[in-house]
Length: 87
Length: 100
Image (cartoon, rainbow over the protein chains, first blue to last red):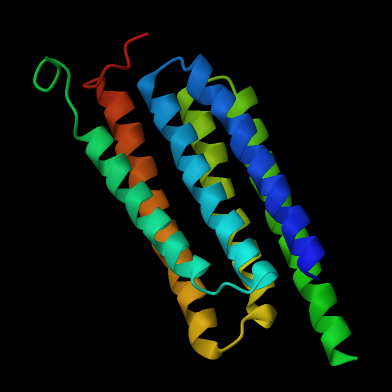
């Protein structure tokens, strides 16, 4: 079972890396933010899969922090306005 | 016997979850405009992570750990829905830097 969990974690890491292509090609900042959000969710999935595979239950707490930071970052991004916040 | 059955169940659920993550990534890369990409992204967020959490339930060492994973899924669902609405509203009003 741990081998299967680690393999699935690797699949999720691969989707995370592929999603980075969208961060590079854009074209709008919203697209980049969405790709970063997918990266956060895949990271949560990978951590949850690795926690039982490696026998480190504390990784679930790390995943909780990831979820919290992803939510805060999206809200902070959407509150940004051109002309007001840009230097 | 029960252990083998539970293992098969979690393997099936985790495979389905990973499939939704792959589908979400492919959608994010291939779909034509921002709103359809947003749609693909929320599928991966809610369904992919949900299926993986359900698949990991039988492997949880104690009930509190299982409850923590369920709450984590709930947090991701609420924040994903809120974030998708915020991004879509911002793009519709064009009050960000999204003019192409």
